[in-house]
Length: 519
Image 1 (cartoon, rainbow, N blue to C red):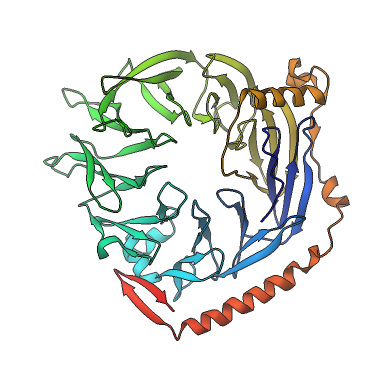
Image 2: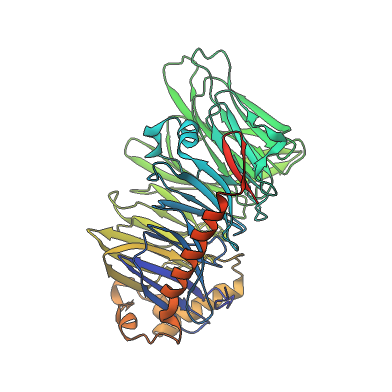
């Protein structure tokens, strides 16, 4: 799919999904910040999502999933037959689509498709899926995605967790590596490095606390254990990877010396350093409760929201390296009235400290390099989404089916509001790579000022904010061929249905409970 590819940070794309309707907008080039309608559809999808690099737009319907693309409007490119599909996931390299349907009584719960050809690469039926997640009751609370992809976008490996084992597959044959799972007694969770074929797994302590908990780094495909950290008396943890795969932070509750209470602490792995050093990290006050933790993307800093009683703080730290050891230098601690979540720009440096809907609604725009607050706004957001370039950020509210999207610049100037009835979803179009140079930062500043003279110097309450209404949709003239999409979709559905009938005559191979189809 070819779409506008202006690489400046003042360009962006996004979609709005209201009940039955999809609006897709581009904003290309510097000097203006008013999005232009690229495509508008009334197709009644169940859900809508971009592929990880923004190449495709994916929608789900009762009969299956469809991906769309095009240069002048979106055309259906492929249909994936999976009745009553509930959830979909597209692999990082956009080669495979995973779909989940909990309603197919006798059919496939999980299917993996080749994105380009629509070929079914793997099927997991209902009985095997129930066994994998622990019974029929667990299906309604399935942890999605079931399959987790290795961090690099080569789509080489995928894995899922089952009782006492992690099943790791390679996509050349969609078979298990070494024809057997990675065994780990009582394994509770795992995650991939975002950049390397390394799995981190967590095994809690046993009921009698005889065996300590452990966090292990496992190399794939060799399954070699690169590093292990034992943790005494730990029953749960949270794992946080830094986006470049340089660091892994593991947060857990630790008993004090008298074992009458617990406090929260971290161990941090230096993944890229020789020997993978591990260091302890604790807050200055062990009694503080940690509310949120987040690494700076592509950087060495991290932020922590912590609280004790009525006091609430946000602290910023930097990782330093000396003699193959990790050290943590506190940069600043902020006093805030309310804060519950941290939202870094995808290119680092800038962050929003947020008190979301129901917690006050404060949004603090902060520069972690200059250690200064850029702006403070109040908006009861249910979700916050940065644009892939880091030039803009959207806060989304949804009250009684009436949604409102507010778009700010990275430094906290309100640029655009988008009110919609029957609102369901707002999504920026992803990009394969993101950058935000000083020149691009200046371009955003100039574009903001071009809206209304010295707009950047005005308070948001004092200016007339551009409103993106439905007017463009009502007056938009569809390009030639736009209305042929449903004819093409019907053709795809029939083609896939015929292919499914032919599959019944193909050889089926069962491998560790998975039904693999071979032509």
